[in-house]
Amino acid sequence: MVLTALLFLLSAAAIYAACEYFVNSIEWLGKKLHLAETATGTVLAAFGTALPESAVTFVAVVMGRTPEVRDIGVGSAMGGPLVLATIAYAVVGIALWSNRGRLGRTTMRVQVEDARLARDQGWFLSIFVAKCALGLIAFAFKPWLGVLFLLAYAVYVWRELKDEGAAADHEELEPLKFQPGAAIPTMLAVSLQAMLSLGVIAVASHIFVLQLESIGVAMHLPPHLVALVLSPVATELPETMNALIWVRQGKERLALANISGAMMIQATVPSALAIFATPWMFDAPLIVSGVLTMLAIIFLWGLFRRGRVDGRALVPVGLFYAVFAFYAIRSFV
Image (spheres, rainbow, N blue to C red):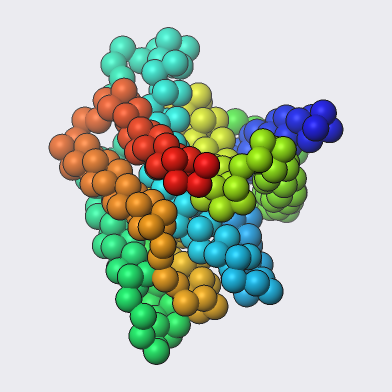
């Protein structure tokens, strides 16, 4: 148990350190590709950090030998969006509030494009409702509908890149950590730092999840409870860490763009894989997680639609995850 706790803490520290390198490299990569900050967050950062959890879903639903293992993949596809829509946004609000002094902020207003984020919430909600509806009914050609979710993500990426165009509105960037003395780092150094940091994130996240599962076993928690409540928090840790780092730097636009883009990936790619390989039928806990995710998104959509969002208003959305955790614990323990 001591070794498990040590690996748990070391892997969490490794994820945070690797995320520092990743966000640094991804900002330079976006600038090199002439992408604006929002597209850098929604496409590049989100795609990179979503790879580990998408891999978890792929391994579970495609290579899983038992229905129980495949259920873990379905739980990951549903649990990821819930964590991002609740805990990740709450972390942004808390980080903005706690760092307001060092950032020199006189107000707690979140400096983002409110209308754009409201549109993203609406886009996500429509896709999420569709995938939840599929989990309530059974029919022969359901697996083929997974293609539609992949197409939806492709359209989302195309829209993000089209809207941003070639405008690069990046603030002054910190030197690349792999080339601290270079005013303009090379593309090779930027790419190498991004790939190596992403690799560390993937490995450390895998170790973190394994230790979390071991802690669940040691505490005699049911495997289904760990898969639905604890594992999604662990697999979405890179996005949450990225958001924390960017907010501490006063770049909440990048932080929220990363979360928004990761939510779109979680609503489409892992879901498509699970629809391809499983019956995609929901039990009561999955239905509850879906409903709470929708309520959280409606809450966020309302905030951003009104505009001039106060960072403290993002914190209560974390309560939706607390409600789900309480329900799951009462159901399985």
